[in-house]
Image (cartoon, rainbow, N blue to C red; front, side, top):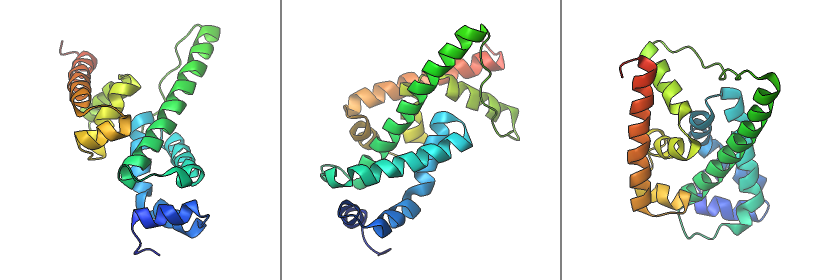
Length: 181
């Protein structure tokens, strides 16, 4: 079964084959977890979101129509799981902040060896999710703009504009955090 293509495996998952899901999980776990981590900045949350993503793969496997590559469909699921989480988290955070009248500190990040890397990480997580996702998908997940357009259900031109704006905003936030502006 480990020699089967992703399309063959997702078809088997749609028929209820949990072993096929296990193969897909093993095959794509690192990429999915990496995207979840880069979208949230928290390892434990990324682990939960990775699990949630594969639960959705199981739930929606019968609906995979092969209009795009399996990985594009998978990234679309992961994107939706991450955005749902970030949206819910921002609502909860806003309620807590109003109640406490103090901002909640960002989640603790693993301490990087380089202070500039920490500053870059802070700048990335300060971006709105729509801008952050384009950078995560292109720079960390290695997707092309065409693949990202499929994931985000938009045009390649729109993704190029988002990527350009995201990089500009990332640079600006990085410089502000570093105190160079």
